[in-house]
Picture 1 (tube, rainbow, N blue to C red):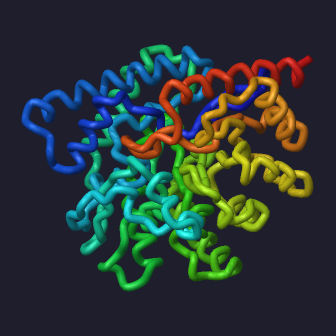
Picture 2: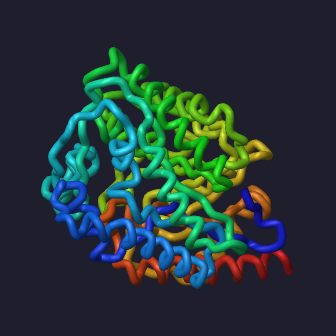
Length: 384
């Protein structure tokens, strides 16, 4: 992973707004409703969207870029298309999840999760990896968009075993851990292929934080901490043969507009999270519920090999952050961790699901532009 050795570099979490027509085509694919002409047109539409998305990231000053996850219905549920053992399921509006903080305020889920539409099938058989062709197409599209001499560092997203288990229930394996580690072993092939192809791997693992108020609401804090440790173990198992400096892990609390009062505190999970073998850690640090948590690092010894990628842009707010505020947030982390180990990012993806947008696409790009502007200001302060 690149480090900020001469200036503050910038990145984001991965998912970016799909063009409207493409998002509708992907949703139609999810519903098995694509006509023959659309089936034929979809691959070219995805490739074109990746090209535009990569170019727009670079134009807005992003240094470590993704393909925007243009081909995926969702950052986690896409995995059902690349794994065996799952039966068909309908596409429920709102994702079909019970989310504790939204449940506390009846009626809020309907508005907060509007547009979140993705099938969540059940595991009914042995899980194996079958997505080689789909992954190869994603990598080919991304490489073509980057060109022969890219000036930016590319990363590709992949779902963690735990977040797949969060969305896709199990009826086959005898225990939750059997299922979790079967997913880890299957997804290991995707993780390895991404890094073998020369890309940085980002494992999206909101189960390490969001899991507290979705999958494990029945447990007390200590119980959740024990489960989070098992989820960390599953990730470490899956990446055991990959250079840890080629991997970053993103944890979050859910990129939806809600009260988030049930979110677990960073101080209660950070010791567990730091047991991750990967060197990069992407975390929320800009929104109203978590912007104070930079203080966790005041009294914490972070292993020297870790690169912290704090969210300095709130991806679920329509405010476009002022560059001075962005710079303040960056400098705050740099003063605690060292400027070389801070790679500012966004709190979450701007389009975690193809048809689910927390903010208007134009605002997403404006926010990334503000991120780059803030990084320039922070560079002036940190390299006087």
